[in-house]
Structures are given as structure tokens and as C-alpha cells.
Image (cartoon, rainbow, N blue to C red; front, side, top):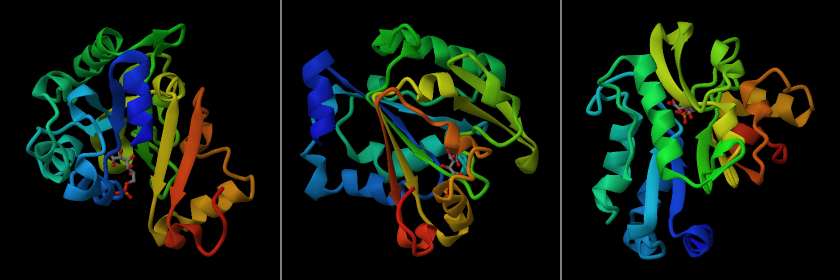
Length: 220
Ligand code: 6PG
């Protein structure tokens, strides 16, 4: 993957944040397949997570477990370069610890840690990572934060806009007819209320939207 090679040439390592949920699973399996595995120097990749459900690493809802099973367990990434969020400690402490880790491991600019690539999904309410509508994390200036999501009656951990928008590239992976209403609103310029609409990375924002989510239109 050219992006990883460019990052590794520029600053020695490719700093990647993975998306959770179900949409990216096909991509993760592809990256771990015989056809693609050799196209990346995985020994110089550092893997982080855009967000995590506040559950154990082996829980069926864990994004880390999903990424481990679909991709990470099948790639030669040094274990010390895979950084799940630590959901075994108190949730706010876990967020603060992750923010410190980002400051220790990633290249920095005046805004903070700089990812080369952040993969994100979008929910049918226009959330991305765990930046849900009408939650306080949308205004959080820290690098990562804990957020209680009423609709799930559950805590989550997430990178904030400050970190997401400081990335070199953000790729939004959106699939499924249940996303078509939000995509349609975004295309019509009426999407400003959705958390996903506030993604403005310093570099590129690329949308990868399947036909079902496009509802027959063109990408936003
Ligand atoms: C999560 C994700 C979340 C996800 C969207 C879309 O932890 O669930 O980070 O932001 O990307 O909810 O989920 P699907 O890909 O399952 O539709």
C-alpha cells in the first residue's frame, strides 16, 4: 500500500488507527489475505483504534477482538506495535492513558499526535468512532475521551475530533442501505448536524460508500 510505504520512508513507521463495527471486516480480511499481506511492511506499522466498546478484549462486542480475529492475528506485526485501548481499568483513566500513549508513540505537531491514516465507519445516526450525536465528547478538547452512550446504555472510549482531524488521511468506510438516509442528507448539504460532518482532517478525507448506502446517488 503506497500510503504505508510513503509514511515509512518519511518517518520510519506507518501509524494507523482502525475502525470498529462490521463494515471494515471485509477490508481487514483482505489486507490479511495472501494477495495483499505482502504489499505492506507490517514490521513498521503501529496499530491503534479509533474507538472501543468498554468491554473486555475477548468480548464479542470488542473492536480489538474483531480486528485481531479478522486481521491482526494473521499479520507479522510485532505485538508491541498493536495498541488496544485498555478496557480493564476505569474508563476515564483508560482514555487518559490512551492519550498519553498517542503522545509517546506518534509523530506530533502543534495539535498533537499525527496519524498517517485513520479508518472510520459511520452509524445510521451519523456518528463516527464513538462521537455520537448530542454527546459531550463532541466538544472535548482532549486527545481521547470516555463517553456514555445512552442509546446503548454503555460506556465507550474514542479518539476525539482533535486527534481525528489531525490525521494525514481519514478514510470513511460506509456500507448498507441503513446509511442511505444520512448519506443523502450529506449529499444535499443538510448533514451539518451529524457528527461525521465535522470530520475535516488536515490532510485528505476519502469516502468509500457502497451502492446500498448511496441509494443510487454519487458519493458526497
Ligand atoms: C463501533 C465503530 C462505529 C462504527 C459505526 C458503523 O465501535 O461500532 O467505531 O463508529 O464504525 O457504528 O458500524 P457498522 O460498520 O457496523 O455499520
